[in-house]
Image (cartoon, rainbow over all chains, first blue to last red; front, side, top):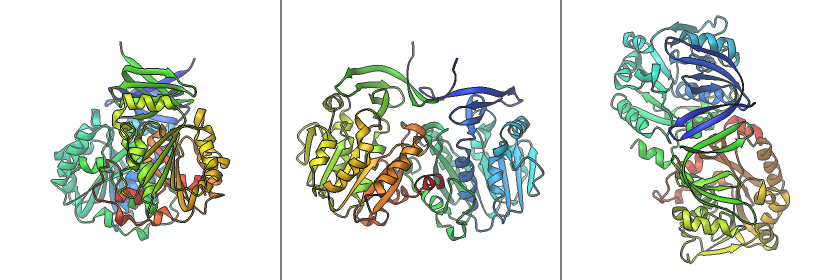
Length: 278
Length: 278
């Protein structure tokens, strides 16, 4: 008997993948948490039925949400990650020599525990005591409300805007992000699919540009996510990511997707995406 | 009752989409031809069970297979399209003022007839008598064998390398393409997914670079195709597509994906794609 798992990406569209076995299934205070072993994507984290990340393609999302903003800032020292419970983002963040401290606030301790156990390639920076990492299990929204003038870069590595991630897609949250950043700080957030979440992309762009003088959207190709193309949005107080000094990007940085050409070209938007954010 | 149609993109991966109705289903000499009306992608052409194109996202594939090579050549006048029976590629080709003649050789007349009837937005250049178009129903491989020093640009707009498209993915065919091109000509072919057809991408790259002095791979995000990211390969006798004069690309060209920044950035390859073609 073959087992197939289907994620309905929209009401009328699904991605279906053959499953070898379910390695973990539980229910936390916030959501249903599962790890399945798939034949195409390898082990995958699934939250509330939505594919979050897979051993096959996680490098793309994690490299692109970390390195693009970090190379947009000339000297990022203090970084905050909201969410990111699988550990992939912080694994990339701590590759940057300039980083002195990476704080991470993840709401769901079960996600961290499960990823440490079943996705060690992704969660490697969470396993052991990384000297630069300060991991807190808690509410990212509350953390942001209390933070002021603290961070060079904030990375909002959240799930979809339903369930525990919902409050991270609001103007009130972006106002707190602005306050929590230093005077030359910048932040990034994953902002869903330019094909299937066009109203959301539009609204977030309006919210963020009403607060930050510089806003830039960039794209990355991620097969696990709806349409295979994913948006990230940077709000910046001072530095324009499209004018970053890319000469300081090392030729070999251990990345499998990101490189100096990708850092520049990811900001080139197809016309239909430009239309969305006009 | 809900109808869903699933394309198995690999042995272990499927894209499943809700169908309103089947508008056409037939069997030609070469393949099974169907047009279905889907809720997510609108009307779609399906050949031998594989999604070929949809009203929702066809603009991406057709703009990118036509405009990137045509803007890589300083003065394309005579163009040959192999395949392309839905008409989307020639619709884009004839937008170029410099084009004097666009020949098109499609093996399957049923595809042309069905697309003219059910996909008029895509096949618009096939409907009516476009003065620059010369459409021939016939074998592209044989046509290429007989052509010599004729074309500025050849566009191989084929289906997957199984069924009628198989012979278009061989070194023997590329040798004929080389012969059919003028001394400064170039050609492009859709070369499948960098995620799921890595051995094919590698082999084609070797075959084409053994014949053409200049070879460049570029990428476009197409949600209907496996992984949402698609390869195109250009073999060129003289002009390097990455050094094309992009200043002659009009600011408004009626495109929804392609623009001057996309023309340049589509050649920026993620590290894992660079590795494939090293």
